[in-house]
Length: 544
Image 1 (cartoon, one colour):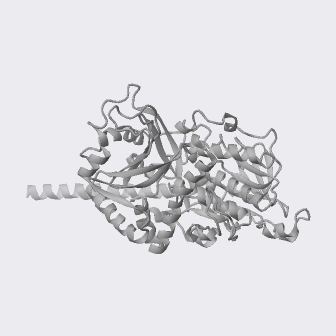
Image 2: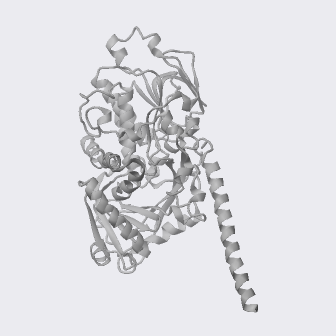
Image 3: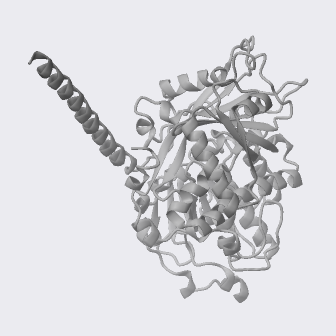
């Protein structure tokens, strides 16, 4: 009888523990959804120090601002990262091509130039096409998933082509072979089958699958790695890429473009004006704008209330580390890595080095290593702090994968150079928002400029200009480097009135022709799309 009672007691303990765990997870989940649906606020004033932002190539741009804030703008761009740079460059060059003069384009940045996500990410132009295709296929079907994957992959050519054409050598932009190293059999088998599926839908996306022995020999991993998948990717210094663009544009369009750092947009209200119907309120004054572009990624819902509960920020972590003394460095920085384990992954590039040695290793990830497996990092827009458990993981993962023979003793100066955090963005349906924002999402209805066309402009130019409005390119779902540039470029063409112009020439950094010829329709924002979304739909992806 005693053994029966003991068994019952033990079973009760197990059931009780399971119930407590489920209740805790449910409470955590509810807290996450509430937190993720709140306004993000403005970027914190004291962010962690990013390796990428040190030693800026154009020091005069770090805190660039006019002596007096411009009072009017044809286009006001909120944000100064890669999206904002793509919007501005495409718009200015297209307006010049069409001889459609712009009076003023104003870039408004809450902190220093490009100090948000672009200045904090991994610098990895890496389309993990096999996992993306599998995820997107569930939502959009195979044909449309393939179109989105191809759009992502366009960044592998357009960004390097632009860097070469403009001689942005400071950006260290390069093609790399990337290899995803798998630490468990289940993940490796699942992703290998995804590669086979991708080959049928997007045959040009070439991938090589290697077993454990081949991976150890070719990629110098240790026996902890059960297999690998390798494919083409790219890498660059993201801050230097974007600051090179701003420097070039300011040189080419000195009277049209202005950058206003430390000028956060606190609110936007309608103005009693046909031509410039938006008032952007900042601590330095108010700007009257014809168009407003939201290029703030995870912070977009701060000024667009209708996106709350549809889009959220996540705190991610990056580090710069010195390679171990036996690490097989590439002096040209032409290899990158992923480390995949269960539902988690890390990602790494290596900067070009000198004297036959590669440079610093730029390692990020560890999202699921936090105390609550990533839940406590979701709905967090604070890049002024670092999660201790995530940092511990990033500090220790490299010897785990490469030691002992291919890591060796740490560098004499120590392994860690720097660690910092940044805010990435997830959307409820996993793809970005691009295009004109419906006033029902902003709560701001303005007058139509068509009622009183400007007499100062030729009739043809009036007809080509889009009606005043708010626009967005944001919500890159953690994949900004394979979404942001062309999403921003699409908005630039829309603002220039060239969205449907099949004669837009192809040039470095930009596909030619009509926007709908290369921008997948699933990325376009609409009131109906947003209305049907809920962050609760991300439960499967976050493994809740």
